[in-house]
Length: 344
Ligand SMILES: *Cc1c(COP(=O)(O)O)cnc(C)c1O
Image 1 (cartoon, rainbow, N blue to C red):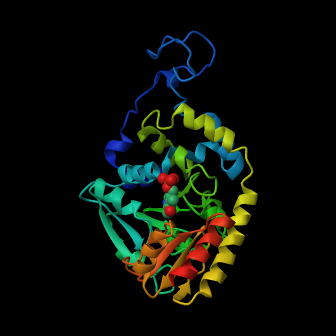
Image 2: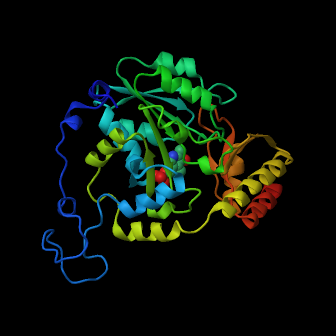
Image 3: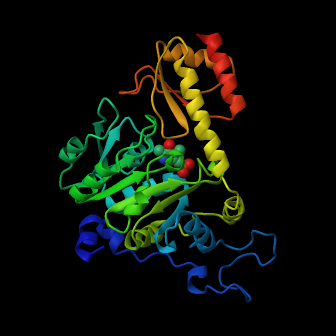
């Protein structure tokens, strides 16, 4: 990123930050007698501080995603990456972010916590991106545009041309959250990383990779931005136990699970649409379905009585009357369909 752009977009205090230097930053060898970090020397598996750079884990992620290690940030869930975007680029009470609605709630929460104004632009009726309205909502203090594609809770992906147009026309940073990209037929925006210095792509190990409990969120961007993320994050934001489990579990091939979930999504979508009382099942590019019904709240409560918990989105503007239903195992999905037969 050219120096003027950095100066314009990154908060001054962040640009002039001298990051905390850990004992493990100063000496990177792995053999020797380590008397540099005031650790307990008796080995119990976890007595040493973890690698603050997460080099081995990033190497594996780099292989899987085909993205160089220098362009990868690993955070304590996507939550950390979202919060870092706010803390790095947005001056509290001065700058603002623009996002869409309905979408994932964390962008607003992170902005509210950081005392940064949020400007929400309603998606078009068909849930496509209102690019002109988004651009019209931006002013000189807009630092970030947050997009989510495939979008939660609507389930659709935005066209890559629309995303490209926003990234080209907007002078701040476009953050695109691809938590569900592995279930999507659309291409990832990571293929545009080399073209745009103002693009941050978020992904996660919580969904397709099945590691929600380990809390591993990913951010991909050009090296300058990733370097700033590394300077601002807590030095040991990823712990050793999580890192070891993630390295092990990432050896599993999740392709078969993903294809099964996609075929279940399509099966569920067709079966749901046949149920009387269900008005619409929106097309989905993710591992959930947005389902409109006559009385969503009642249906939600009846499903709970059947021990099936879905997400009630019926009060969300743009999703009136909708439940968001995650695609489960084939057995779970059959149970859902049976229960819905009884509930309606
Ligand atoms: C589930 C989800 C995430 C994942 O969050 P983690 O903190 O990584 O578990 C991120 N973005 C969206 C839109 C999601 O729905």
